[in-house]
Amino acid sequence: HIRSGTLVEYGAVSEQNLVMATRESGRLAAFNVQAWLKEHRHELVPPVGNKLLFDGEFKVMIVAGPNQRRDYHIEDGEEWFYQFVGDMTLKVVQGGEFYDVEISEGSTFCLPPNIPHSPQRTPGSIGIVVERKRREGELDTLRWYCDTCKSVLYEETFFCSDLVKDLPPIIQRYKSNREHRICKQCSWEDVS
Image: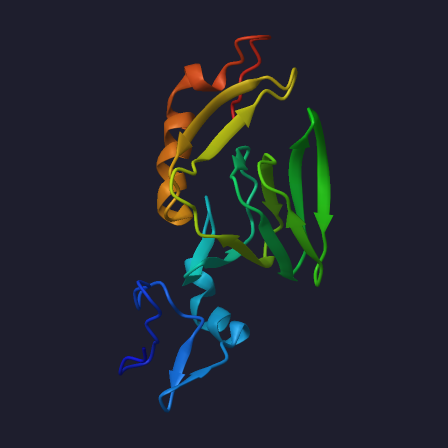
């Protein structure tokens, strides 16, 4: 239903999280990404650089660079990437092979489910990422790998309700505990 004010409430979505569907004379209207960026670009800061634009069946996020995190994200659903401004590299691990998927400005890519991935965004870059809402019982994982032998250094599994809020504490736990950052196979240490 349409609420009075400047935003539309759709189902259980709160006004705080819904900026893509706007109200204009009581009707749904298109959302101008460029206008939003002019006003909110300063809010897209590391370590995540992410702002949730729409939180319904699909979660639509705008993500800015720089983003050079070392963690890999794993989820049960697909993720759709559109590179709006600048280029990005999506580091992936598939069948034990580590490689990069280059996503240039104006390009799109759909990542299959359960593929460990680490978005690496250049300074000034802007992308849009679409994920589906997590289903009951689905858990995400944040994982770090050894640079030398590619063994898993550390990982945490969690229910993801909001990447912007859920990821920073996990990243902080990894960075603040040296034992998490030392490879048990070859003794390499992540000092980043």
